[in-house]
Image: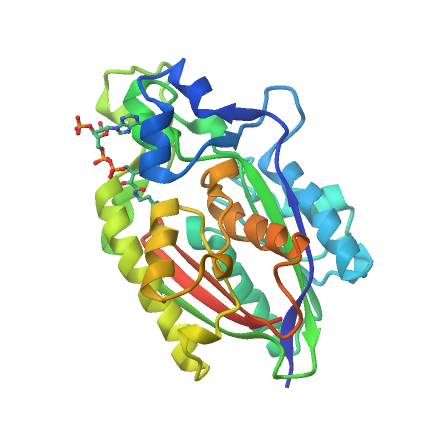
Length: 335
Ligand code: UT7
């Protein structure tokens, strides 16, 4: 019997910072609106020509995580890559990372669960390690949102929220079963698939030669979100799945040392904090600086919390996410 533990963490954010004021110059929005509704002050966007892609940002985060894990890249048995913004339609970005890291023939698999992608990837990695099949698994969450957002006023409800960035973790075999990933809890509800989605390009809707901004079909090449419905479901599902994880491990909310929620909206994190009676220092938020980086958000936040010395050995760390699918999940970790 084995457990898995996070043995190394890394993150990479592109240098180019886009403030709320920058956005208000290109669309009808304001810093006040964005801060009041989301808590976001600024986000990072890849700049044309800076060499960043979903995969290359993932590699930068991964190299740091591998070094901190104290392993050689050739000790990695599997790469799991979570993203909704892959470099190519196919193949997935995992194989690009494998090539860039120069790890010959190691298996690479992409996970397509959007904001919950990193939790789904952690759960998958944990099972491969618990079964004894693999010892070290590289898990990456990475997004290049800025390449595909509608930056006109029409897209403002979505495009002010999302940012680019990448986080990575190495999961390694742990023989002490009281440590590491204690459990993960996953859910989805496909009836809401189109409420937060990018419908095309897809096998249902290939890209036409010329995009027509007035054609509703062409508008679907941008992400769309039913913000209020997503918000309402998020607060319910976040609460449920955190409680499910705690109950499974006979823990109460007072045992949480650090909650790392997916950085969807500062208001959602604050709601959860209050609901579980947690003090501010027990819930980590960095959406103010980076926006919502979807699959990147939890590993970026986890890395930053750890780098800031906010996570210590023995701590109960809870990861929780909700997003497109709808999908949601939690992981309960003893650090
Ligand atoms: O990571 C995946 C999970 N995602 C989430 O959890 C996101 C959940 N949803 C939300 O965070 C919020 O719904 C938003 C932040 C996206 C939107 O906030 P809201 O309070 O739900 O606003 P709304 O969509 O109801 O829009 C209110 C008004 C509308 O104008 P009218 O119809 O009242 O005249 C919008 O057109 O605000 C307008 N609006 C904006 N105004 C200025 C929408 N976006 C903007 C904007 N700047 N960027």
